[in-house]
Length: 85
Image 1 (cartoon, rainbow, N blue to C red):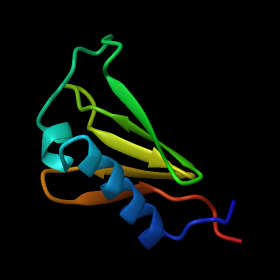
Image 2: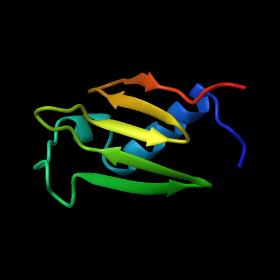
Image 3: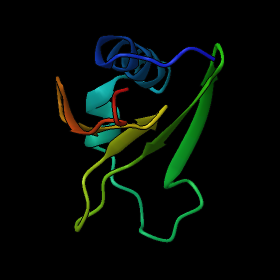
Image 4: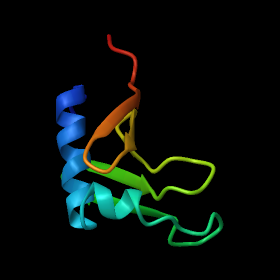
């Protein structure tokens, strides 16, 4: 599996979010903190993409290949990136 750059990771994250109704749907649909539906994992190509719905005390995030993005209504904000060689 080839390492992703930020642009590729962001595109895959947005593709996964679109499958769930878009960033606004995930960002604006908080789940109960202990709900089994609080996270979703989708597979696109060779990548598992984990989406965690927002809660009162934590933001909605999407994680893939070492990248973590905070989900906002119409944007993704990079929180963490894997170390670059």
